[in-house]
Image 1 (cartoon, rainbow, N blue to C red):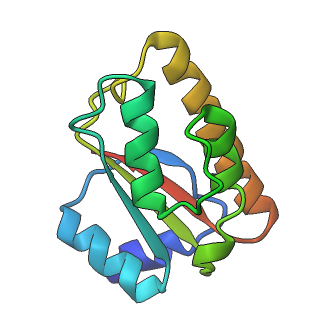
Image 2 (image 1 turned 180 degrees about the vertical axis):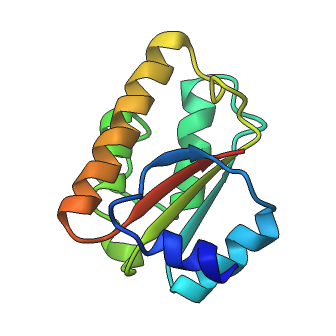
Image 3 (image 1 turned 30 degrees about the horizontal axis):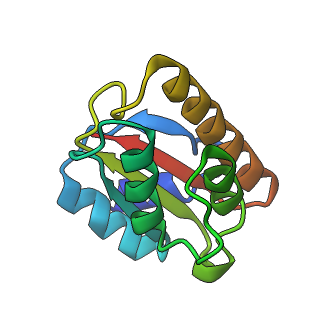
Length: 131
């Protein structure tokens, strides 16, 4: 677990990955790193609306969250309500498509890539794990 905690703190490695360790190990490493964890359960997501609802819930998004992809990008690039030295977004039970159409999945993938790059530019690791 110490190795995972150290890796989470490595700004250069932060990005989008498939989770390859037990959830408990990830939770412990996130806690040890003092990072914020956003745990999005996407099992019920069968379209963009349900996906955005699950994301807003996991992010504890503020009232201004507009339940569209622009609002998701804005929220992921803000996180002022959850200041932390780093962030982990865990996407659970969404399958390869995350419950989205191909076009929506492509747009969300771009948002996620932009998010990890933005936070790197701010000196904060942002990790996204699929499981």
